[in-house]
Image 1 (cartoon, rainbow, N blue to C red):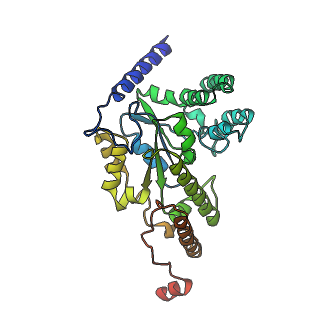
Image 2 (cartoon, helix red, strand yellow):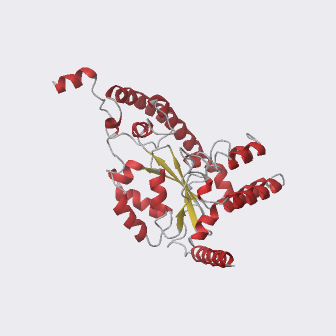
Image 3 (tube, rainbow, N blue to C red):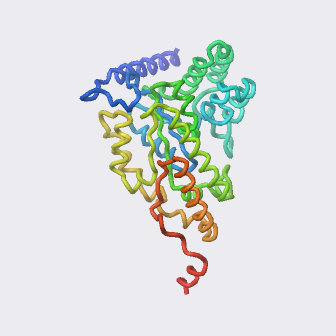
Length: 339
Protein backbone atom coordinates (compact mmCIF):
# COMPACT_ATOMS: atom_id res chain seq x y z
CA UNK A 1 0.00 0.00 0.00
CA UNK A 2 2.78 2.44 0.91
CA UNK A 3 4.64 1.56 -2.26
CA UNK A 4 1.50 2.20 -4.32
CA UNK A 5 1.03 5.59 -2.67
CA UNK A 6 4.65 6.57 -3.30
CA UNK A 7 4.39 5.45 -6.91
CA UNK A 8 1.16 7.38 -7.41
CA UNK A 9 2.70 10.52 -5.89
CA UNK A 10 5.80 10.28 -8.10
CA UNK A 11 3.67 9.64 -11.18
CA UNK A 12 1.45 12.63 -10.43
CA UNK A 13 4.48 14.87 -9.94
CA UNK A 14 5.95 13.67 -13.22
CA UNK A 15 2.70 14.29 -15.10
CA UNK A 16 2.37 17.78 -13.62
CA UNK A 17 5.95 18.65 -14.51
CA UNK A 18 5.47 17.46 -18.08
CA UNK A 19 2.27 19.50 -18.44
CA UNK A 20 4.06 22.58 -17.15
CA UNK A 21 6.97 22.32 -19.53
CA UNK A 22 4.92 21.28 -22.57
CA UNK A 23 3.03 24.59 -22.35
CA UNK A 24 6.04 26.86 -22.82
CA UNK A 25 5.24 30.08 -24.61
CA UNK A 26 6.96 30.51 -28.00
CA UNK A 27 9.98 32.74 -28.19
CA UNK A 28 9.44 36.31 -29.46
CA UNK A 29 9.30 36.30 -33.23
CA UNK A 30 8.33 32.64 -33.39
CA UNK A 31 10.40 29.48 -33.02
CA UNK A 32 13.90 29.20 -34.40
CA UNK A 33 13.54 27.28 -37.70
CA UNK A 34 16.86 25.59 -36.98
CA UNK A 35 15.59 24.04 -33.74
CA UNK A 36 13.52 20.89 -33.43
CA UNK A 37 9.86 21.23 -32.33
CA UNK A 38 9.55 22.09 -28.63
CA UNK A 39 5.86 21.24 -28.13
CA UNK A 40 6.68 18.21 -26.01
CA UNK A 41 10.00 19.40 -24.63
CA UNK A 42 11.59 18.50 -22.31
CA UNK A 43 12.18 15.12 -23.78
CA UNK A 44 15.33 13.06 -23.10
CA UNK A 45 18.75 14.61 -23.62
CA UNK A 46 21.23 12.13 -25.05
CA UNK A 47 24.87 13.08 -24.45
CA UNK A 48 27.67 11.27 -26.25
CA UNK A 49 31.24 11.49 -27.41
CA UNK A 50 34.57 9.77 -27.05
CA UNK A 51 35.68 8.38 -23.69
CA UNK A 52 37.19 11.13 -21.49
CA UNK A 53 35.62 13.87 -23.64
CA UNK A 54 33.40 15.25 -20.88
CA UNK A 55 30.16 13.33 -21.44
CA UNK A 56 29.63 12.61 -17.75
CA UNK A 57 30.52 16.19 -16.75
CA UNK A 58 27.98 17.48 -19.26
CA UNK A 59 25.39 15.02 -17.95
CA UNK A 60 25.80 16.36 -14.43
CA UNK A 61 25.62 19.94 -15.71
CA UNK A 62 22.37 19.30 -17.60
CA UNK A 63 20.92 17.51 -14.56
CA UNK A 64 21.57 20.61 -12.46
CA UNK A 65 18.48 22.01 -14.17
CA UNK A 66 15.32 21.02 -12.25
CA UNK A 67 13.73 19.49 -15.34
CA UNK A 68 16.20 16.64 -15.71
CA UNK A 69 17.55 13.78 -13.70
CA UNK A 70 20.81 12.09 -14.65
CA UNK A 71 20.71 8.40 -15.49
CA UNK A 72 23.53 7.40 -13.16
CA UNK A 73 25.16 4.84 -15.45
CA UNK A 74 25.59 4.42 -19.19
CA UNK A 75 22.46 2.44 -20.09
CA UNK A 76 24.01 1.29 -23.40
CA UNK A 77 21.21 -1.02 -24.56
CA UNK A 78 19.63 1.80 -26.58
CA UNK A 79 22.75 2.99 -28.42
CA UNK A 80 25.80 0.72 -28.11
CA UNK A 81 26.88 -1.93 -30.59
CA UNK A 82 24.42 -4.81 -30.55
CA UNK A 83 21.76 -2.53 -29.06
CA UNK A 84 18.46 -1.21 -30.34
CA UNK A 85 19.85 0.49 -33.48
CA UNK A 86 21.42 -2.79 -34.60
CA UNK A 87 18.29 -4.76 -33.72
CA UNK A 88 16.03 -2.37 -35.65
CA UNK A 89 18.39 -2.49 -38.64
CA UNK A 90 18.52 -6.30 -38.61
CA UNK A 91 22.21 -6.44 -37.75
CA UNK A 92 21.57 -8.41 -34.56
CA UNK A 93 18.83 -10.82 -33.53
CA UNK A 94 16.34 -10.57 -30.68
CA UNK A 95 17.89 -13.45 -28.76
CA UNK A 96 21.32 -11.80 -28.71
CA UNK A 97 19.87 -8.43 -27.77
CA UNK A 98 17.87 -9.82 -24.84
CA UNK A 99 20.87 -11.84 -23.66
CA UNK A 100 22.96 -8.65 -23.45
CA UNK A 101 20.18 -6.83 -21.60
CA UNK A 102 20.16 -9.55 -18.98
CA UNK A 103 23.92 -9.97 -19.03
CA UNK A 104 26.61 -7.39 -19.71
CA UNK A 105 24.31 -4.37 -19.86
CA UNK A 106 22.60 -5.41 -16.64
CA UNK A 107 25.73 -5.97 -14.54
CA UNK A 108 29.20 -4.85 -15.51
CA UNK A 109 32.29 -3.07 -14.23
CA UNK A 110 35.37 -4.15 -12.32
CA UNK A 111 33.32 -5.09 -9.26
CA UNK A 112 30.13 -5.82 -11.19
CA UNK A 113 28.49 -2.83 -9.57
CA UNK A 114 27.49 -0.93 -12.68
CA UNK A 115 24.94 -1.42 -15.44
CA UNK A 116 21.16 -1.22 -15.63
CA UNK A 117 20.89 -2.73 -12.16
CA UNK A 118 21.73 0.74 -10.83
CA UNK A 119 18.58 2.32 -12.29
CA UNK A 120 16.07 -0.57 -12.56
CA UNK A 121 15.10 -3.60 -10.53
CA UNK A 122 15.04 -7.09 -12.08
CA UNK A 123 11.22 -7.21 -12.13
CA UNK A 124 11.02 -3.94 -14.08
CA UNK A 125 13.54 -5.11 -16.65
CA UNK A 126 11.91 -8.52 -17.10
CA UNK A 127 8.43 -7.04 -17.52
CA UNK A 128 9.77 -4.52 -20.05
CA UNK A 129 11.62 -7.19 -22.02
CA UNK A 130 8.60 -9.50 -22.04
CA UNK A 131 6.35 -6.80 -23.50
CA UNK A 132 9.09 -5.74 -25.92
CA UNK A 133 9.54 -9.23 -27.34
CA UNK A 134 5.80 -9.74 -27.63
CA UNK A 135 5.18 -6.53 -29.60
CA UNK A 136 8.40 -6.07 -31.57
CA UNK A 137 7.45 -7.99 -34.72
CA UNK A 138 4.25 -5.98 -35.21
CA UNK A 139 5.44 -2.57 -34.02
CA UNK A 140 9.25 -2.55 -33.80
CA UNK A 141 9.68 1.21 -33.35
CA UNK A 142 6.89 1.66 -30.84
CA UNK A 143 8.04 -1.41 -28.92
CA UNK A 144 11.59 -0.02 -28.82
CA UNK A 145 10.38 3.37 -27.62
CA UNK A 146 8.33 1.75 -24.87
CA UNK A 147 11.29 -0.37 -23.78
CA UNK A 148 13.52 2.67 -23.30
CA UNK A 149 10.75 4.46 -21.44
CA UNK A 150 10.00 1.48 -19.21
CA UNK A 151 13.62 1.08 -18.15
CA UNK A 152 14.73 4.72 -17.82
CA UNK A 153 11.64 6.83 -17.06
CA UNK A 154 11.31 5.53 -13.48
CA UNK A 155 14.58 7.29 -12.59
CA UNK A 156 12.93 10.63 -13.41
CA UNK A 157 9.63 9.60 -11.81
CA UNK A 158 11.34 8.86 -8.50
CA UNK A 159 12.62 12.44 -8.38
CA UNK A 160 9.48 14.05 -9.76
CA UNK A 161 11.35 15.29 -12.85
CA UNK A 162 9.76 15.50 -16.31
CA UNK A 163 12.72 13.95 -18.12
CA UNK A 164 16.27 12.66 -17.95
CA UNK A 165 19.75 12.98 -19.42
CA UNK A 166 21.77 9.90 -20.44
CA UNK A 167 25.49 9.64 -21.24
CA UNK A 168 26.22 6.48 -23.24
CA UNK A 169 29.21 7.32 -25.46
CA UNK A 170 27.74 6.13 -28.81
CA UNK A 171 24.55 8.17 -28.31
CA UNK A 172 25.55 10.56 -31.07
CA UNK A 173 26.48 7.87 -33.58
CA UNK A 174 23.06 6.33 -32.89
CA UNK A 175 21.24 9.68 -33.05
CA UNK A 176 19.37 8.93 -36.32
CA UNK A 177 17.71 5.93 -34.64
CA UNK A 178 17.17 7.67 -31.30
CA UNK A 179 15.75 10.75 -33.01
CA UNK A 180 13.18 8.57 -34.78
CA UNK A 181 12.28 6.99 -31.43
CA UNK A 182 12.16 10.37 -29.65
CA UNK A 183 11.51 13.10 -32.24
CA UNK A 184 11.81 15.92 -29.70
CA UNK A 185 14.92 14.65 -27.94
CA UNK A 186 18.07 16.76 -27.83
CA UNK A 187 21.58 15.49 -28.46
CA UNK A 188 24.84 16.94 -27.14
CA UNK A 189 28.02 15.82 -28.86
CA UNK A 190 31.04 16.30 -26.60
CA UNK A 191 34.34 16.68 -28.41
CA UNK A 192 37.86 17.16 -27.13
CA UNK A 193 41.41 17.38 -28.45
CA UNK A 194 42.16 13.77 -29.41
CA UNK A 195 45.55 13.88 -27.70
CA UNK A 196 43.89 14.73 -24.39
CA UNK A 197 41.43 11.89 -24.94
CA UNK A 198 44.31 9.47 -25.51
CA UNK A 199 46.08 10.70 -22.37
CA UNK A 200 42.91 10.15 -20.39
CA UNK A 201 42.27 6.65 -21.76
CA UNK A 202 45.61 4.91 -21.47
CA UNK A 203 46.17 2.84 -18.35
CA UNK A 204 42.53 3.18 -17.32
CA UNK A 205 40.60 0.08 -16.23
CA UNK A 206 38.50 -1.44 -19.04
CA UNK A 207 40.25 0.72 -21.63
CA UNK A 208 43.56 0.33 -23.46
CA UNK A 209 47.26 0.85 -22.80
CA UNK A 210 47.95 1.41 -26.51
CA UNK A 211 47.85 5.16 -27.35
CA UNK A 212 47.60 4.52 -31.10
CA UNK A 213 44.57 2.30 -30.55
CA UNK A 214 43.06 4.94 -28.26
CA UNK A 215 43.48 7.58 -30.97
CA UNK A 216 41.82 5.22 -33.45
CA UNK A 217 38.85 4.89 -31.10
CA UNK A 218 38.60 8.68 -30.96
CA UNK A 219 38.62 8.89 -34.78
CA UNK A 220 35.88 6.26 -35.15
CA UNK A 221 33.66 8.08 -32.68
CA UNK A 222 34.28 11.40 -34.45
CA UNK A 223 33.42 10.00 -37.88
CA UNK A 224 30.32 8.24 -36.55
CA UNK A 225 29.17 11.47 -34.92
CA UNK A 226 29.72 13.44 -38.11
CA UNK A 227 27.67 10.95 -40.13
CA UNK A 228 24.89 11.24 -37.53
CA UNK A 229 24.96 15.05 -37.62
CA UNK A 230 24.44 14.92 -41.38
CA UNK A 231 21.59 12.41 -41.02
CA UNK A 232 19.52 14.22 -38.37
CA UNK A 233 17.41 17.41 -38.65
CA UNK A 234 19.34 20.67 -38.32
CA UNK A 235 19.49 21.86 -34.74
CA UNK A 236 18.99 18.44 -33.17
CA UNK A 237 22.65 18.00 -32.17
CA UNK A 238 24.69 20.57 -30.28
CA UNK A 239 28.45 20.19 -30.60
CA UNK A 240 30.29 21.24 -27.43
CA UNK A 241 34.05 21.40 -27.13
CA UNK A 242 35.13 20.48 -23.61
CA UNK A 243 38.06 22.88 -23.87
CA UNK A 244 35.69 25.71 -24.75
CA UNK A 245 33.35 24.79 -21.90
CA UNK A 246 36.05 24.73 -19.22
CA UNK A 247 38.46 27.42 -20.41
CA UNK A 248 38.50 28.90 -23.90
CA UNK A 249 34.92 30.17 -24.27
CA UNK A 250 33.14 29.45 -21.01
CA UNK A 251 30.42 32.08 -21.26
CA UNK A 252 29.68 31.59 -24.95
CA UNK A 253 29.51 27.81 -24.62
CA UNK A 254 27.33 27.96 -21.52
CA UNK A 255 24.90 30.33 -23.26
CA UNK A 256 24.66 28.05 -26.29
CA UNK A 257 23.74 25.20 -23.96
CA UNK A 258 21.11 27.33 -22.20
CA UNK A 259 19.56 28.28 -25.54
CA UNK A 260 19.66 24.72 -26.84
CA UNK A 261 17.83 23.39 -23.78
CA UNK A 262 15.36 26.31 -23.80
CA UNK A 263 15.97 27.22 -20.18
CA UNK A 264 13.76 29.97 -18.78
CA UNK A 265 15.82 30.06 -15.59
CA UNK A 266 19.46 29.01 -16.03
CA UNK A 267 20.22 29.84 -12.39
CA UNK A 268 20.56 26.30 -11.00
CA UNK A 269 22.70 25.23 -13.92
CA UNK A 270 24.76 28.41 -13.68
CA UNK A 271 25.45 27.79 -10.00
CA UNK A 272 26.65 24.24 -10.70
CA UNK A 273 28.72 25.46 -13.67
CA UNK A 274 30.54 28.08 -11.64
CA UNK A 275 31.09 25.74 -8.71
CA UNK A 276 32.18 22.58 -10.53
CA UNK A 277 33.17 23.01 -14.18
CA UNK A 278 36.78 24.18 -14.34
CA UNK A 279 39.92 23.93 -16.44
CA UNK A 280 41.79 22.41 -13.52
CA UNK A 281 39.32 19.56 -13.06
CA UNK A 282 39.35 18.84 -16.79
CA UNK A 283 43.19 18.80 -16.87
CA UNK A 284 43.01 21.40 -19.62
CA UNK A 285 46.23 21.69 -21.64
CA UNK A 286 48.04 19.02 -19.60
CA UNK A 287 47.81 16.00 -21.87
CA UNK A 288 51.61 15.93 -22.41
CA UNK A 289 52.17 15.42 -18.69
CA UNK A 290 50.06 12.26 -18.69
CA UNK A 291 52.16 10.13 -21.05
CA UNK A 292 55.91 9.54 -21.63
CA UNK A 293 57.55 12.11 -23.96
CA UNK A 294 58.26 9.61 -26.80
CA UNK A 295 54.60 8.54 -26.83
CA UNK A 296 53.46 12.16 -26.64
CA UNK A 297 55.52 13.06 -29.72
CA UNK A 298 54.24 10.02 -31.61
CA UNK A 299 50.61 10.80 -30.81
CA UNK A 300 51.11 14.48 -31.61
CA UNK A 301 52.37 13.64 -35.12
CA UNK A 302 49.56 11.15 -35.77
CA UNK A 303 46.94 13.49 -34.44
CA UNK A 304 47.97 16.35 -36.69
CA UNK A 305 47.84 14.07 -39.74
CA UNK A 306 44.45 12.80 -38.63
CA UNK A 307 43.08 16.33 -38.28
CA UNK A 308 44.10 17.13 -41.84
CA UNK A 309 42.36 13.97 -43.03
CA UNK A 310 39.18 14.85 -41.14
CA UNK A 311 39.18 18.37 -42.57
CA UNK A 312 39.55 17.00 -46.11
CA UNK A 313 36.56 14.76 -45.46
CA UNK A 314 34.43 17.70 -44.38
CA UNK A 315 34.52 17.15 -40.61
CA UNK A 316 34.72 20.82 -39.75
CA UNK A 317 33.61 20.84 -36.11
CA UNK A 318 36.63 19.13 -34.52
CA UNK A 319 38.38 21.88 -32.55
CA UNK A 320 41.73 23.15 -33.77
CA UNK A 321 44.43 22.51 -31.13
CA UNK A 322 45.61 25.60 -29.30
CA UNK A 323 49.18 24.65 -30.17
CA UNK A 324 48.43 24.42 -33.92
CA UNK A 325 51.59 25.19 -35.89
CA UNK A 326 53.86 24.19 -32.99
CA UNK A 327 55.28 20.71 -32.78
CA UNK A 328 56.52 19.04 -29.66
CA UNK A 329 60.29 19.31 -29.27
CA UNK A 330 62.28 16.27 -30.35
CA UNK A 331 64.55 14.28 -28.08
CA UNK A 332 67.64 16.37 -28.88
CA UNK A 333 65.87 19.63 -28.22
CA UNK A 334 64.57 18.36 -24.90
CA UNK A 335 68.06 17.14 -23.90
CA UNK A 336 69.61 20.50 -24.85
CA UNK A 337 67.03 22.40 -22.87
CA UNK A 338 67.63 20.26 -19.81
CA UNK A 339 71.36 20.69 -20.14
